[in-house]
Image (tube, rainbow, N blue to C red; front, top):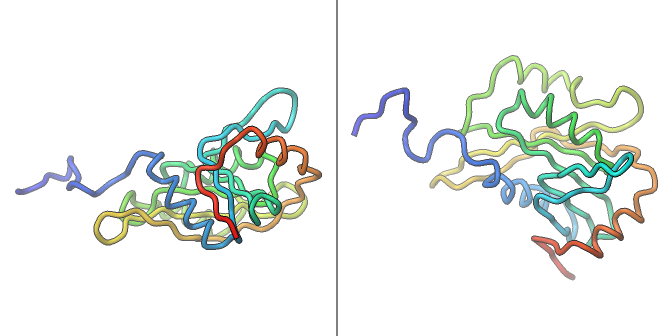
Length: 178
């Protein structure tokens, strides 16, 4: 069967954003110790009563360690603008954006240059860098994820009470125990 350029071959092209949650979570799991992972959760407010929704929230060391938040976007250019803006507003030790890359969507050369410069990933002042995760299509059509640029720790302030409250009211989607 011949395919036109207007219609990608089956198993090629972008996927629903929700399909990226698990590969991104497993990418973080490889980097964390005994993580608790949550999908599509309202993460505690930074001001007033506004609650941001994070695509992935992960707590290291069975919930007693660092907080990681991830915003997943369709493409690298959108991740570098909208995704970074979203995670910068969330209280967390580590902030990440993820995008659909190799085997899913072509990556623009301009976006890659912007990623290499790291400028969109840095706060206006202070410490930290937003990490970047690329969701890829693997052999057999499975999805995987790789860290393109590791996140650096942000000054998060005292968020222990927020973490405890969150864990009291939310059940994790993925949890590892000793």
